[in-house]
Image (cartoon, rainbow, N blue to C red; front, side, top):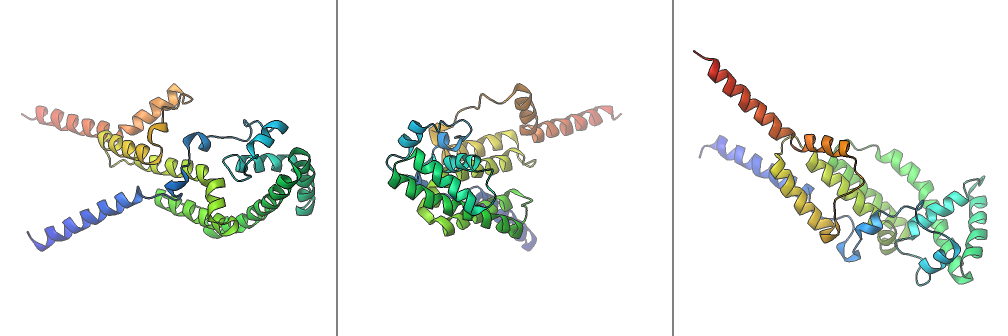
Length: 243
């Protein structure tokens, strides 16, 4: 084997190792068991009536409902003129909706959440916008590290864990799906591994995707295969046209 062949082989191996690393690991430790169902929770659809709120936070204020609940409280306080006014409106609501001790703990955590949101604006300007899938994953990991610094690791991973898993899955899925260098069979294998790794048996086909979107996705999925067929067809036609 020549020196040049060895160098080429080393470059190929390094590329494959780099690519494999890109689709391994988790921002949220799997011991937290983030659920696919929780990643789809939406505060606009969750029931935050008084009885539901008391039930959701009867045992702990930190769970899969906390983030959506804070978004809901944000809506209640959206007319606030400043932070102090926001906290006062939140205090009035929480003490009316929850038992006194629970309300006090929730208000303290909500204040931390408000300060997190304020600090996040500066962080996002500092970090800038990602332009590639790996940069997006790095940015998501950086965001979660900031949350851990504010809330503490356990609380941050419980509150934001499902949403981070959903975003991480979306980034990794799109990186595979829109890779023009992969054939459909390769994409299917990588997606199967990704789905099993991140969600296991929870993942099912999304029935909310329109037929047109499915059609467009299928074209993208088979882009390299279609391109290869056209190339082979062109070569065949050229070969037949020769005398």
